Image (tube, rainbow, N blue to C red; front, side, top):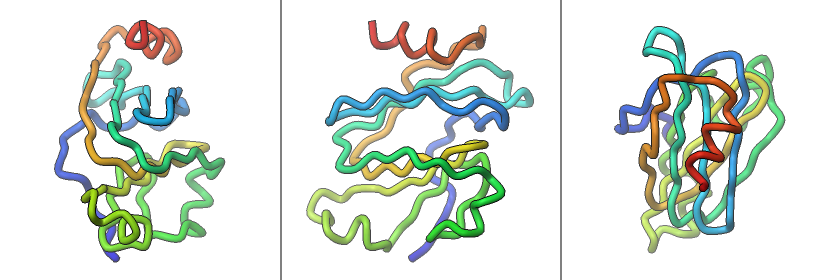
Length: 132
């Protein structure tokens, strides 16, 4: 098992707001604030062909108790873990995304950037604009 930073260069996570998510059983949309050094604003990512999706209440102080050594406020890709072994015919990826008070565990086949709204504002508004 190895934890690394994914190859995708998505905007860096902000360290204050928790994400807003929408999961329909197939795709998951995750809206998060970006860090001010990368321009701020809100980002929406789409995880496609999701096999498993979980939001867990765990703040950054609790990360040392996580089953994998993940970094705070970061995208962490776990390779060679038990989560992907069961589904290896699909070549899934497993990420743990850590925010201030929650982590998102997502086992998926594809991921893409949907929007980077540099205006910022409420995360719910950004996500609803994408869903409409």
